[in-house]
Amino acid sequence: MPLSDLAIRKARPADKPLRLFDGGGLYLEVTPSGSKLWRWKYRFGGKEKRLALGSYPETSLAEAREKHFEARKKLSSGIDPGLQRKVEKFLKSEGGGNTFGVIALEMLALRSKKNAASTVERNQRIVEKDLNPLIGGRPIDELTAPEILIPLRKLERRGAVETAHRARGLISMVFRYAIATGRATKNPTADLVGALESPKTEHFASLTEPDQVAPLLRALWGYEGSIIVQSALKFAPLTFSRPGELRTARWADINLETGEWRYIATKTGTPHIVPLPTQALEVLRELEPYTGRGEYVFPSTRGKGRPMSENTINASMRRMGFDSKTMTGHGFRAMARTILDEVLGFRPDYIEHQLAHAVRDPNGRAYNRTAHLPERRKMMQAWADYLDSLRLGAKIVRFDRQSA
Image (cartoon, rainbow, N blue to C red; front, side, top):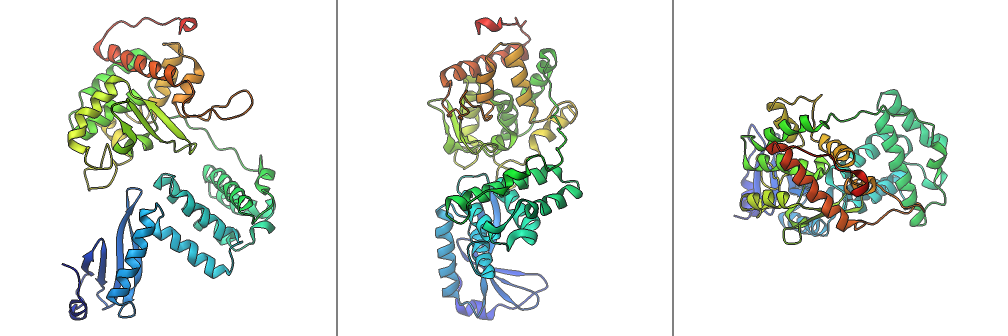
């Protein structure tokens, strides 16, 4: 039942915060101290968030509903209202739209429509905690390479070398956006190439020998757990997509008739196509009656509207006896890359395209998502057939690379 002014006035504080819901996620929180605060609970990118909409009686019930309505309109257009508010707040505090902090948050809000929620949140955290305290208030066209290096060096000193490199790439994106919108004329991050310590390369554990892969597949297909986890464990080696892309896969992006899964690759931010072999389609059709009415193919069992936890695949393999030094969810990519090349003899560029890596032509231009799609479709089916033969114990004959 919707709230009324009478019910709000009568609400009394308790030992714990009391929530009075009005509908659509809008609620009034009565704190133990007696404050009455308007809040809106919403989801963006599969994650639950809350937005403050003022306090009562300064913000009346009618005004709270109006703010709620405006925020929902932003959400429906693909904008995170919470992030948008931070942009507006930063813009007001800095007194203009030409500072690094304002432009960075503006760019993140714009990209939140197409980037994965985890990527947006990670970049937002870097901007707000690592960059803005040191360079956020500076006019972007006045920033120099030595100034930009200051927050990056600070990250290095605390041992976050990979984050420092990620931050440099993020700063470069902000400058490119500023140049495109007429608020900067140059990108000084190019002068920082080689200035940062090189990150240590850590390879994800993976099984790449056929005689080791066979028992892994038999364990995956024999896993005794929920139908969602069973399906994810089968789908992972068949498609070898990135773990984050697998767990956030949406039914809206999958076409069971054409046998394709289309989404934006998290690493490159570009459209990607996964041709689905018949085995993967079988997995999806078996799962569809259970999760097909929801958003996510592999939803969380802890609540509606949430994708599977990022630890589910790895934790399931740990329970089956495959420790973190033997196999990881990301390791299916190395498995496919190695065996498709060294055993099945497929062309490396077909493999790289299917891994959603940034493959470029001889002129340095990025290939589009449909490059070699017919050949990749054949490769994916051959891969799935090969996995079946390993799992079922058939003898595998190594293909001649020249004939593939």
